[in-house]
Length: 240
Image 1 (cartoon, helix red, strand yellow):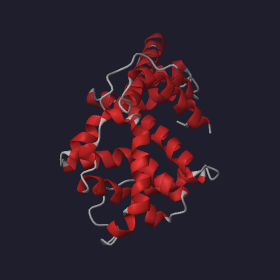
Image 2: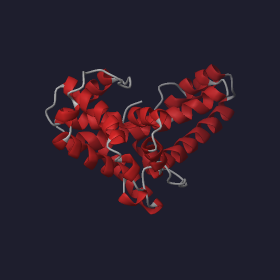
Image 3: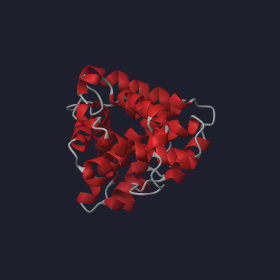
């Protein structure tokens, strides 16, 4: 599903959830290697996009985005992280800029490739090729929006997998934006439902998507009152 196909869903996102996604960075700061790896996998893409748009080679951008997370843990920066510092995406970018300016050359003395978390840099390169006119900050912000959407879809898909309905999700997700090539009748036949039941199920899927999206966004904010504004910013970023 393309970026723009999510925009209406972003604007229609529903009831807010508790903003506690700082937990991931705080757990990493307590020395959890699992949390650090999860943290890296969740947020490497925006940092990689920023580094590439700043003129770094693909190899150097990989080293930067990977080394940054280990640097945070080693320098005890994560232990000092506080939700009161504001929006998580802005806080993370500030730390990354500082790392690029002050620490990377020294940290990069280690041999390339050691202890890296496996992520899809090729996919990130393809995304950057589609947006060659973006500044480093713009590339970071847009990649951040894509990460939030991907996290939302992954969580939604997992719900279906937990019910042994992975194939059903593959069919139904194309109806999320109301622009599926198949008709509701065809979709219903594919999943073994009546057309009316399928229509209701798609409506429920859209509501679940909106709630999960809002939860993902709220998880990166300190103030729950900022959720709607953040959702609108995501919409603008994806239109760019």
